[in-house]
Length: 271
Image (cartoon, rainbow, N blue to C red; front, side, top):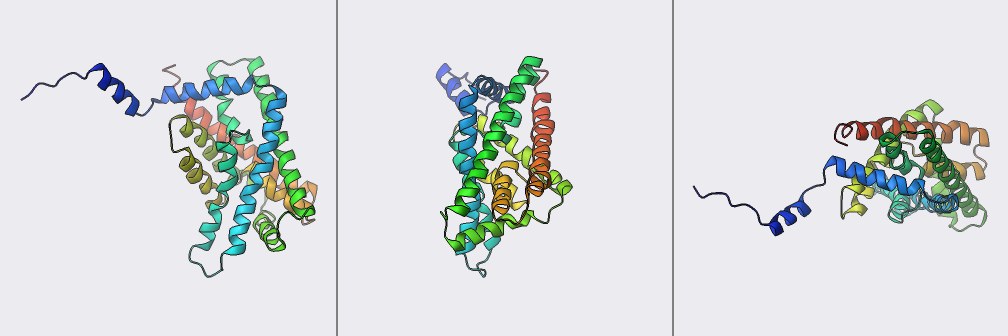
C-alpha cells in the first residue's frame, strides 16, 4: 500500500482555513467582543441602543404588512407572515446595533473568564444603558407610527392585530416563553462568532423560530406593547408589569443563566 504523504505547509494552512473553529476559539472571540463592548463610551451605547429600538419596529411593520397583503386563503399564510418578524432583527444585528438580548452572552463571558466587582458593575452599566435605549427607541417608534400616520390605515390595523396577541397572556406565561427566546438570541451571537459567512441565514433562521414558536423577546415585544399602549388598548401597568418585566427576566435567564453558563462550562477546563 502506498505510504501516506505528509501535507505541505500550504496544504496544512488550507486545511486549517476549511476546518470549523474549535469551541474555545469561538469562546475567545466572543469574550474579546464583550471586552470591547464593555469599554465603549456610554453615549455610543445609548445611541446605538436607541437606533436598535427604533429599527426593531420593522419586525412589526413587516409582519403586519404581510398579514395585510396576503389573502386569507393563501396556503401557509401564517408561517409566511411570521417570517416578517425577522426583518427588524436582520437590520439590527447585521447593522451592528446594540440589542439588549445579544449582550446576555457577549458581555457575560468576560465576567466568567475573569470575575470581579468592577467588571460586574461595568456589565450592569452596559445592560442598563442599552435596555433603556432600546425601550425609548421602541416607544418613540410606536408613538410616531400611530400619531404621525407613517403607515396606511390598513397596515396600522394589521400591526395592532399582530400586537394584540400579547393582551391575553399572563405574566408567568410571558416569562416562561421568554426563556427560549433568550437562549436563541444568545445562540445567534455564539454561532455568528464561528462562521465567516452566512450571517444572514443564521439570523433569519434562528429569529424566525422566536415568532414561529410564539416566544417572547423583550425588545421586539416592547414595540408591540407600546403600540397597544399608544392606541389605548392597555395601560402602562399592563405594558410593563404584564409583558416587559416578565420578558426581561425570562430573556436574561435563557441567555445568561442557561446559554452563557453552558458555553463557559464546556471550555472552562481548556482556557
